Length: 211
Image 1: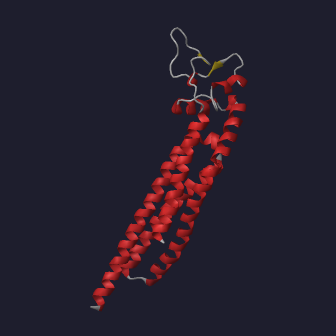
Image 2 (image 1 turned 180 degrees about the horizontal axis):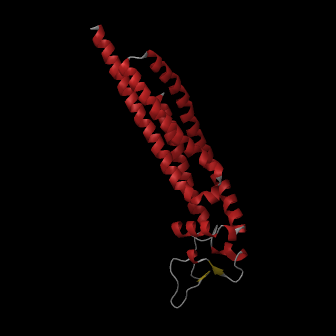
């Protein structure tokens, strides 16, 4: 009976570690998805915004490795490996909590970060033409808050072609009249806020589950 009890506990710990490994993969995948969503617009947000998703990828990979060691320790009944696993589990819990908090902090800061990035790149437009072309083409927007922002760049009233979905007949020039009226700041702001909330929710949610 005692041997059966020990065996049950061993396999219970194994299953727990297996689930733990799956949470590690979840963290890694969410971090990678958010990172891939962000990198298109890195010119506008700067390097500081990447810390949370990158940390998420690293923590997810570490969680998976630790869980694998936990599985091995449970099956081999290695008390040293299991103890090491428990200590590392506490460290990972704190990291996940930190990721969640960072996500919510970034959500609160993103408007200021984006506004600063947009104003800076518009003032230095000649060095950031490709970044603006990409964001305007993908999000179907024009300028920071609208096409009027380009007056400081093009005083003659013309606009980049990426500001126009289609040109008027017999015209191949994008102007204030035929340009997209929506600015890029409100659209990208909503995009980043939703990703930051996902980041925070996943980090804190998984930390609570593991606790």
